[in-house]
Image (cartoon, rainbow, N blue to C red; front, side, top):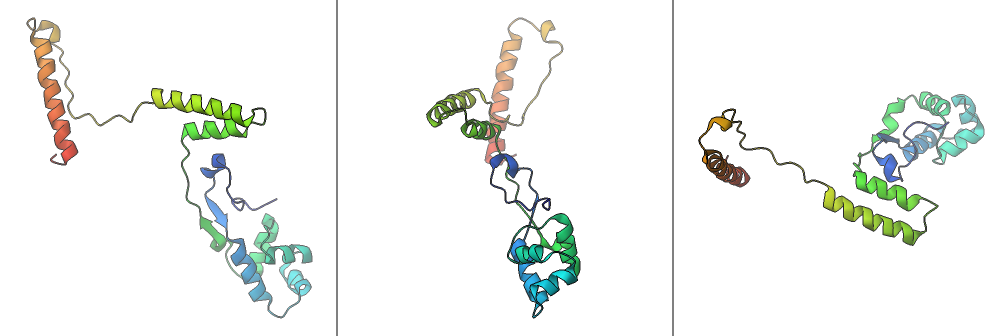
Length: 174
């Protein structure tokens, strides 16, 4: 069993779930330094792990959780010092769908490419741009009671006000 978060992230669908990674090179380096002139067998016995486990971890291999904690205890360090944050990469839904399509073994590469083209075109046409913050909002409860012709003129005035205010917000004046 591997230590959680130790696997290198290579798949886009896993990128957003991985939070930390263990610095295996540093662990191996610290084991070599601590071992000093001790033989690998002596160091492994002191640490409470097998010779083969000690040898593999010292060379940079991933230990299981029990071995990792035993080796950290032997080193006299907290296991947390080997964990480094991994920048989370947000994957867009369209990119995630495309990754699944291109990885599908039932689809020939040219067929997957055609589906990806269609899917991306549909997405580009149908996806809505993020809504801009509303600058002006007005609710007229009495609109049905206004004289004929007033609601369209009021709508025109409010539209102009909205456009001018939006322009001022965009310019940084508001």
